[in-house]
Image 1 (tube, rainbow, N blue to C red):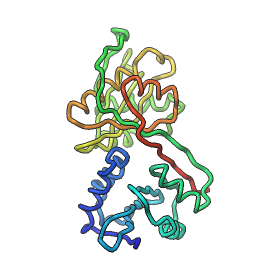
Image 2: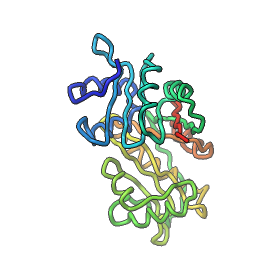
Image 3: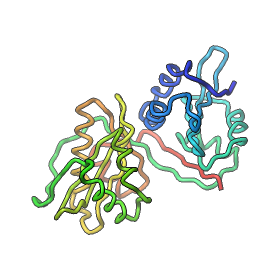
Length: 258
């Protein structure tokens, strides 16, 4: 039976999401931030007769995230979703692809989901004039400026950076008072963190700068027993992540309602 759930299911929901904690890093963070009594954040579960969860649908405004560890009621969730207003649905590909096919969603994007369990702390040779710094309130404007100069990134504001850093951390490299490379984490919890915003200004690429930021960031997380995770679909970026030791554990699909 699929139904909207409340706080009494909190423990079961968290236990279920932690079956694949890396995949559910963002969902675990949203659940912590928004809870069960939020007007714009709703949780629907497939609950069997024994009270076990077989699938979870999160609705945050017009964005849906779906997760299931095994078999789930595809028809039931599709019926529920078809009566909702939403812009996109995302989740583990093996689950969301089934829902999207039945709903007739054709526009999509697929990315790789990776994790890092250990890192070789080798040193990248970079220019001595480049300064590795922690991202903080004093250099956020420079970080946003770099976002604006990298075509792959969407519009980002100081508030976006500030919100991400509330549940994460970040490192950047500066040259002549200008930030030229960066890497950040967000959605940190006691087990995992999501790496985001990895990028280098086009005039400074192929010098190992993003790798340097990633090494510092990921080493710090691993020292705290936090597993760094990330999504990617850019194969050139993927080479950097694999060099650091990231392994692909699953694929993630985002389907858009046209």
